[in-house]
Length: 269
Image (cartoon, rainbow, N blue to C red; front, top):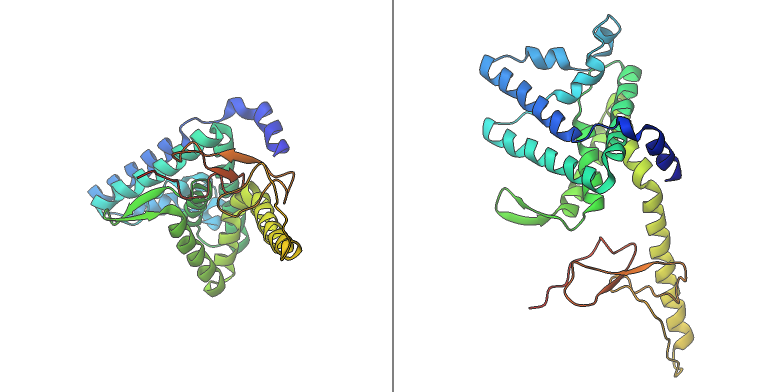
């Protein structure tokens, strides 16, 4: 994204490094204060409520991201650690500025949706957009569900997407706007790549069908230099496609750019 590169060159020095660390620490402080004093007043004071913001409580425009999720004292540590792990990993992958910008887009979208609907807004969908970004970037990352069951993050992302779809269909206009607004950042960052992947997957599939038809009953040997081990696309199918060898696989295993980070690593037994 050239426009984002330009923004980074101009404003990159203002990026907050380790942003997710500060957000998670703030969440933990709020949780501990409410748990120790047995009150939810602090959460109420931090919530995004448009009518109160217009009356002068402007801190609510940003403090809603410091409201922790509802959880038991034991699980809140794991939940917040998971948030931190997702955010810090994305920041390492993108750089501080791009991660800041991704999170800021989600905040701005949520704020706009809140003022349009006039209702209270939480950071739930904003957090889900971070999870989707992580799953899209590291689809084969494995976690232990319930600390026992190993599962790849991409499968949880599909459940996340299903939850968002159901919430969008069944929710009122406020829910619909909140979901769309919080996911603007995801589509800005990944929308073009998703369309490109879908287009090239269909292109490769159609080319494979055409090649099979042309070579049926003919003694023709097709020669290529590069071939993806997942989708089978070759440099003959798409001369513009990029191919790379995976450093995470044992041995020489080549993939197209669409599947370089979206495949199961090969391990020699």
